[in-house]
Length: 112
Length: 113
Image (cartoon, rainbow over the protein chains, first blue to last red):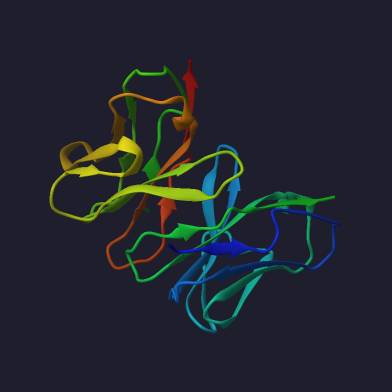
């Protein structure tokens, strides 16, 4: 079974801090994704990566960056955290284009 | 732009009753469609997918969905709901050749005992 592990379930940070959210998958998947989930808005794609060191912007990349130095790890970075980035963040991976995505359990991030 | 619509924000059904959750997609090309379920505090779990072929697809936990091109719909059904089915359900699609999922806003299912 595919396992996607997000390093923290809950995280509390202060405005202006640089925040790192880590995600690791154990199935050698090419594609990895970061979403944020907000009530009434569903899941919105922040960034995705289809190969090591390759990334593409999703629908809401502003205020975020990503890093993929190794195939199994995909990090989301909040350069200077703001209160409007308080949300649930979900990481996912997929083997190939068009294949189903496998999700981690999410990180609930609060920015105070 | 493609979009996925789930018109029902909340649905309440009695345990043992049948269930249908609605999903409409708008992209013109052949869609790749998915249903995911999210239990409280958890990530999303794939219930079923449609790529091509038989328009009635079977998934896990007794769920099925039917693709109807004429109605641009991919509704999720279950003949008899169990209390453990209470969760949020998301429909999603992805364009042919792309690898981004577009999610609907979700339907919260409550099951009354």
